[in-house]
Length: 142
Image 1 (cartoon, helix red, strand yellow):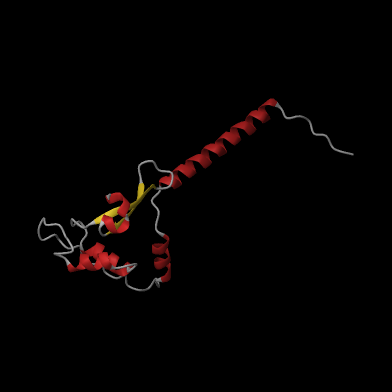
Image 2: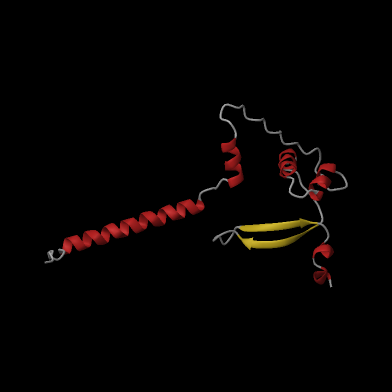
């Protein structure tokens, strides 16, 4: 024997429809706000959680004030020359960025790749290689 239930009344159907629409709106708003929220890199989060809470934070190096309006080049700045020659030396990269923040840098390079960042139409991930264009793509110079 099966138990039959009476059919839903008109107001019950409307209430279920309204509840469904409200849930859809809440999920959509949450997804949009999450997409636009600034994110913290995973490496920075892992480093922050690995440090003991009681330790004193290290003072960040103060940005160097540009002595002149002259751009930094490999000829006039040894740190830039070392940076462009380095491969995956993240400590050197961070130190250089903190020291020369706001300075103008000039070097020979090539845009190796440029892709849209996620689903954004106006944000890009850009990969730049230091060096002469002829080294990376001889066909482009012909």
